[in-house]
Image (cartoon, rainbow over all chains, first blue to last red; front, side):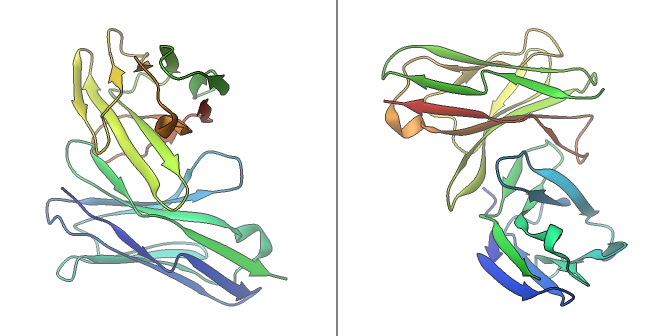
Length: 111
Length: 112
């Protein structure tokens, strides 16, 4: 089956700096790559996603890049703010809605 | 309001006592699934369903059962819970393959 690895497990940045979280996947059949943000005690919520026919997608301060050949995708957050502090999960899914999640990155944005 | 509702939100039970966690969505989504979340392991898919009466195993199905008799409901059944099933459980739904997954609020389950 699919194996999704996520790095780093924790990330601490200063407010205003950029944060980058990276994920790799193993199954070339995966074609949908969402990113979720989970605040303490709450449910994961989608922040951005990308499909395998696209190399990059941006939404305000958040961007995701995908390299299908290398089987890796990354989340980029620019101009970080304290409210960006949370756990972020990447995931890889296929046409059957079978999803595999990374182990999560705890992002701490220091004011 | 579009939502995924799961119950109970918090439960402490004893080993071997059958329990059911209910899940209901009001978005007419075809796809529903169950995940468990454990520290350091992220979210792992237990079972998923592509439509009524169609279910399949996810990554960690052992010890769990599901059913999909109606489109809106997807209960998770633990026939004989064990302490290693202590976890945070999320139900989720999506409109179709490769679409946004909407998660329920989560159910904290402790098996003693």
